[in-house]
Image 1 (cartoon, rainbow, N blue to C red):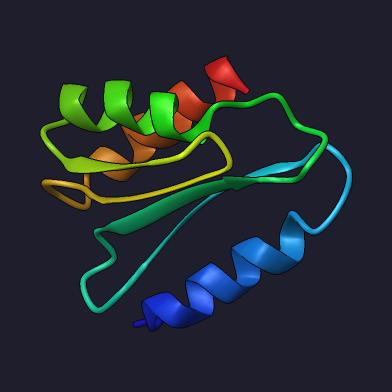
Image 2 (image 1 turned 45 degrees about the vertical axis):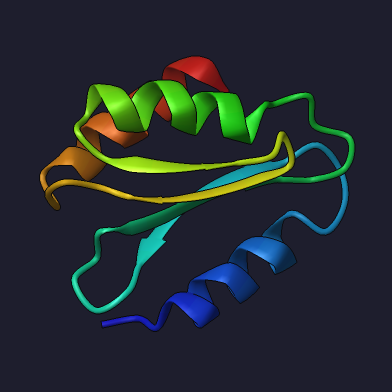
Length: 88
C-alpha cells in the first residue's frame, strides 16, 4: 500500500526536466492513477486520461501537464499501461 501523496511526489521527481512522461498507480487499493510529464514533453496527460479512463470504466481528468484518476478495477491498470506505451 503506497500513499497517493508519495506517488505524486515520485511523479514530480521523475518528470522534473527533459521530455519524460510517467504513469503511476497507488493508494490503499492501487486504483488511483496519475500521469505526469516533464516540461519539454508534448504528451497531453489530460486528453490521455479522458479517453483511456472512460474506455476502461474509470474516471478522472486534468491538464495537459498532469492528470489524476481512478480505475474501476485493479485489472484495468495493465490495459492502461498498454495504452500508455502505444501513445507515449
